[in-house]
View 1: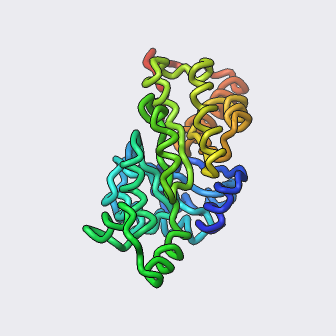
View 2: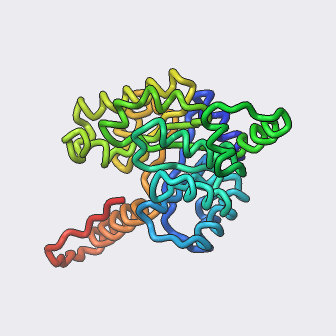
View 3: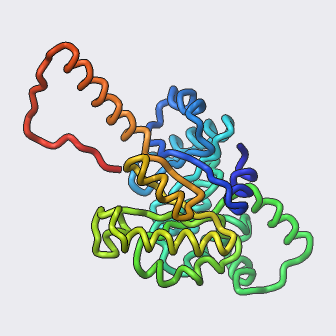
Length: 271
């Protein structure tokens, strides 16, 4: 799939699937390519990846037909430009709470390479020369803009956020959203689910994709799709590795009659 096809499918309401890729191993893309994914999610907000590593990852996955969507550390237009320069197919901006933030990100993602005063004039509604406008629109087809909705203020501003031109999808950040709602990690709570449904419904009504990154049960993830999401980022490579490694080792121990010795310390991992 190309970035253009991914963008078209999001706006058409088609369901697309990705996963969070943590490992920068050069062997990893060849494993991931046959996983049934439509795109990959690379997170630089919480994962330590340098600029060269990130660019190699983006170029590799894009060449395999898995558009890389990169979350930047903050809703910073300059950070957005940087990851696009490295080969990202799209930008995910974390913890967005205002339409003003989305407009600034639109400038970086959809109106590049315009910068400075000229960019601000365009964002403020100034007329654009026909040739330049055609050039900008053609380039914008290849680049996606997604923003994380993960707080009560973001919910309050959702209508204004969705009204910003050029937005391709909103993505629920379930951990932060649940905490902002006063329901930390209570992902089955009716109020949390109602908030997700509101986000999905409003986004889809606006012709914008709506998604969530979730690592829970299959049933929970299916429920989010039933509530209206059409973009699902399923778990993460490191989480899936841990899950299946633990299951395999436990099965081997049971079959061999080997008792596991534990330190008493938790060994869970959350992404």
